[in-house]
Length: 247
Image (tube, rainbow, N blue to C red; front, side):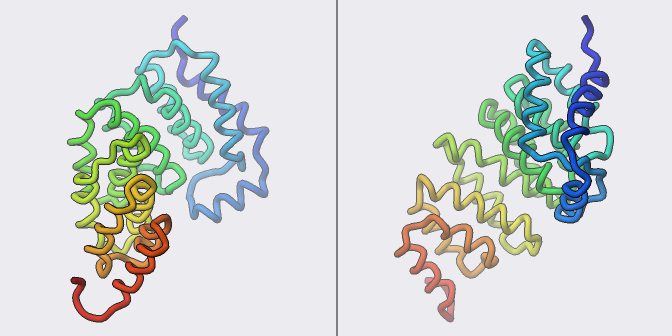
């Protein structure tokens, strides 16, 4: 039987709609400052719904998965797009570096961290962890005019960090030019990545933060020192507050 991506998307939407509430839809729309329509479905319910739908289509190939995700994404509805991200996450081992252009297109259309972060970390980052030929494309994201795409380059590093294979040189190449940016979501992402690195290598994070303490925004610095040993964190706070150049 030929897989019908539009029908599969309609089935998911039909399952999601009754799970939503108007009150939650209005709350989420305000919170995310989004122009999308909202059903008001919780993230756990979206995940459970997509997981159940995937169990009915376990043998889908890469092209079918991409077509299904595209059919979900097509309509400007938050839960449909969240479902597309969850679908790509669940099927990420079927995806390849060639699919990063599709991911980049979705990133540009996302307009919110709620969609961007899953695409960046769980899809792009997971592909790159498995297939190093992905990195030249993601390297280009780090200098993209769209800040959500730049944020995604940083977050794509997280799977490697969590797997104990941090690319510290690539993080530095990405992060140093972004330290002067005023965009909150870039500042937060740099700090987030530093915080994750510090779980395994606090010494490296302490050194990197010391070298850049005066360049960092407050949010970047706070995230960077959040999980450092107390003595290191206090030393860095003192260094950041002291007058004169950093030694």
